Image (cartoon, rainbow, N blue to C red; front, side):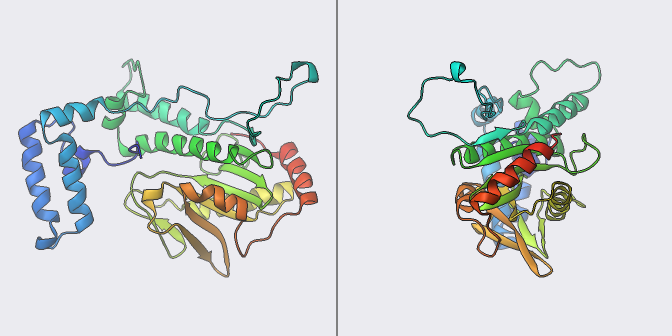
Length: 314
């Protein structure tokens, strides 16, 4: 899998500047290797991270290849917005399976935030010709890179849902409160399908996370951030406003960042929030949550109408 923009760079792992000389890199590697080696009381995972970092930038050739990197620009549309066409304008029928209806701009708000922050970080008066330049992105603070990773995660989710077919509808970047420009209270995706209504948060913190006492924690999650509580609050607010009930709340993370395929998050007596690996999201949306309510065919049409008439986008 491609490396996440939010992942720690080799320089961050080794504790040096991206402009460090090869000798400075070498000294930093030796220091980190000693401190993280399991035989000296270190952790195997951290030791492996140090070795991986060294493999990427330990020689001039490897470092040059790493700096060339990959560009996170999306050159093709990541979703197809549903827009019924008049009979005379419809294209000839195709054999491909119809895709899910998709409304809103997945990842749009996160990309706008990333672009604003990367330019602010670069400095006033500095012209940023390509804000997605790999070298520029890697040199930016991790909290800036996280917004790009989040945008890509949202785009990936919409691609997966779209492939499920016409029986599904997805709304992206949905506002839940009075402040329609606030990113903190929005829901990344609202998905309606045969298995129910789902409020989804698409995330990519760049390294493994886990669930502890009903909340997502881990090295990349900023202190004070509460993804589970934020999604719960947003879903309840939106549900009350539109008169609908969510079947489940789902937080989607990259496969490598979750030790188990799926983790049920319990807050009190309810276990209606799950953290799931990205590759398993389609299965969850098809099968639903075992202890969650399901939506009947008649209810789907009614709920879709309420959502389509009431949802406001960021």
